[in-house]
Structures are given as structure tokens and as C-alpha cells.
Image 1 (cartoon, rainbow, N blue to C red):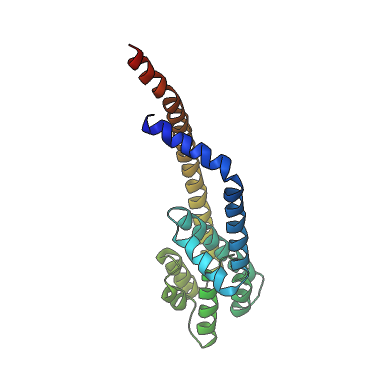
Image 2 (tube, rainbow, N blue to C red):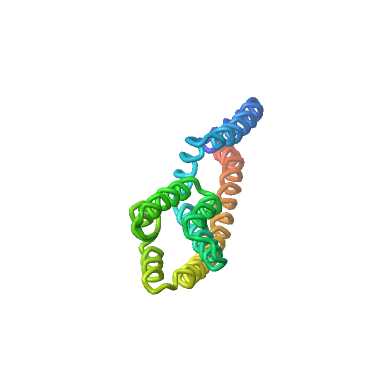
Length: 199
């Protein structure tokens, strides 16, 4: 039999004989990740991995930064002091790596530093956001600058999601077509070879 046919038969046979193992491995992986995320170290490791993912990591980070900027701006506008606002915001970003960086910045601010340097020191916050925060602190318009930063990140996230959708659709079509082509060739090639042998 042709190689493609043997591969198809091997995959089909494995799926028939070990379907329980495949399902069990998937369930075990999901449960393992969920249990790991319940521990502080496991969640930190998972969130660090999420931020390091190609393309998706940057997108998730921009969503978290937009949430950080908008929530902090709202809290400061409401008259809540900076330290209390940061304590609230660190639980809003939904990423323990960023939450830890915000908590470290909060500790530095408590010791008398401004907000921009400790955020810059973490290496997690983009230069644009740091610059806007620094300008806002100096001009006394921190809330307005944070709102503008949040608006900018919301626009970037919307554009990135639209671009991702436009890329994924043709890729899924190509992948589906490749799978169908592989199955068709795996079935037809033995028939063609038998015809050649008969002739």
C-alpha cells in the first residue's frame, strides 16, 4: 500500500483501539492545568506562558493593559487615592504576572517614588504607556492620559482581532482542504496502483 494509505490506516486504527486513551489524556490535561492554576506558583507559570505565546500573548497583554489604564483612570477620577486604586487594579488585569508588577510598583510608590519608574522597571509595560503616565503625572492630568492610553489599546485590540479573524478563515479552509485531499488520495492511490498492475 502507498505510504499515505498506510498512514491513514494507522491513524484510523489507533483512534479505534485507543479512543479512550485520547479522551483520557485530553481530560487529564485540562484538569491538570486547572489544578495547577489554583496554586500561586502554577498560575504565575501559566500566565507567564500565556504572555509569551506568539501573537495571542501580545493581544492578551493589550487587553489587560487597556483594562489597567481605564480602571485606574476611573478610580482616580472618583477620588480614590493612587495606592488604593493600584491595589484594586491589580485584581482587575486578570494576569498574575502583571498583578505582581503592579504590586511591586505600589510598594515603590509607597516609599515615595512616582508611578512611571517602577512600572518601567518591571519591563512588562510598553514605553508608550509609561511615557503617557509620566507626562500625566507631571502635568496633573494622569486620569486623562490613562483614558487616552486605554482608548488607544482598545483600538489596537479591535484591529488585531479583525486581522486575526481575516487570517484564520482562509487558514481553516486550507487546512480542511488539505485533510480532505489527504484522505481522498489515501483512498484512491491504491485503486490507481491496482489498475496499473492489471494493465
